[in-house]
Image 1 (tube, rainbow, N blue to C red):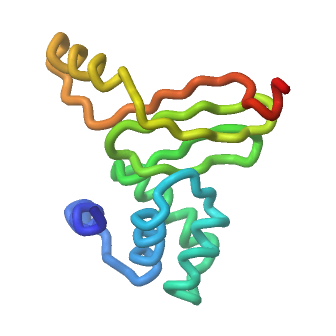
Image 2 (cartoon, one colour):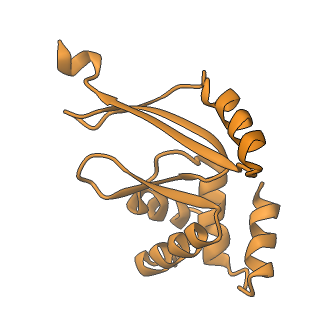
Length: 137
């Protein structure tokens, strides 16, 4: 996965720097629901001199290149997930808790839509909003 991402950066004319590699490695290892501060903290274990601004610039670049995508839940600002494949959430409207689930009927719908419209679907995001077990008590 990381090799494909590196190739995307190179193809777009970007240098492969140690700070960018550190951010990519964190996304490869963790990949789900990371905010920029968490990415910074984990990436500093790989590249201690990494700065906050570099993380934000790298995340913006990776979003433009389709490597990651921001999701907005709660009031904490964006969290980042890998852009490839399908991603499925239950999101609690009260506490902001995010629950991932794997079973997805959207895969069949994506196939049908792709065939009907001649559209090449690369990923999808499915979210349901409501109250988690703790909040609806």
